[in-house]
Image (cartoon, rainbow, N blue to C red; front, top):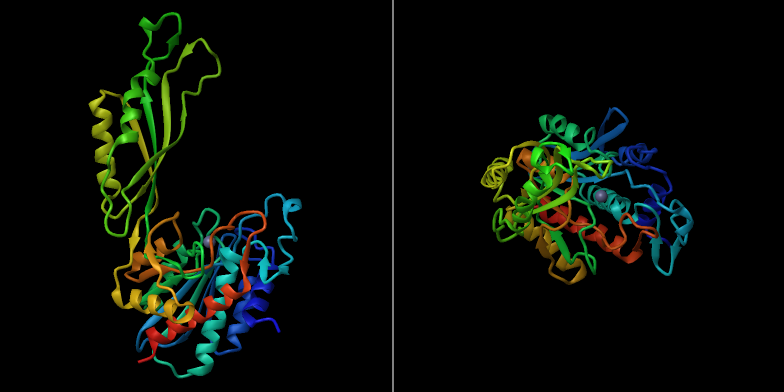
Length: 377
Ligand SMILES: [Zn+2]
């Protein structure tokens, strides 16, 4: 017989919840968990559905699971072994868009919470599940807006995000934080002119060349125990020229920082400005903060998760902060210790996204073990 976690994962995968469309995933879970005594609150902002389901009260420790029902589009459907919405099982592996990122985790969280409440209907503290349908998209009408609303009504000590953190085997990697993400557009001013009359112009490409080289070598910080040093990457350079005989008037550089908690927007801006000033450049900077870094330093939470993983799969996880940003960035600033544990990330956002059935069963058991270790005396 198929494990319950797989039956639920299939039901979710079969819904075409391409971001930001929830496509009925949240109503399905609200109905189901409502029948098990969970309370729920749903908010729709724009095209985005958000829901919090919870059980318990304010007395005792409180753990919130966090996930997203939206998935990225399938890409070339013809290249899939099985249709991305068919949730097909082959040789113990479940295929489908979102199975690893992150409908498999959602199914595991739901089953773990239901089992816990079934076994301990009068448990101390609170368990909750927050879901949004806008994680893969612009992430504006999702957790970013919903969390402040819920934080006014609920107290949470811990948040576990179900993002696919595992690398080779389930539970081998836990994210104890994420780097911040900061975009900057640098406009270097020159003077436009005819290429044959360079004495009358000033080429911003030549002006900026040394500074660009230096940006690539610059040490913004050294990182710390859990974080690698801040990285700076240029994603685009353009002088916007469509003809070959013009010296451009401006050079536009688009770049992104993935930064550790040792830096912040202000320190990075000061460093970049002094670098540009050193080369006597005339410039304009435009900053856009995409997410601040977060870093879980709660030893009780870290030990409970590490012990739960070891108890279920027999390995000790590595704690790191690799990868992109996640919705954890919107939860941690509320003073909630936030970590991430989920399926293997090898096939996420790819054609033939898949995860082993055994991994999803183990994940459910780890989540259940974690709830018990955190909530029960
Ligand atoms: Zn995800």
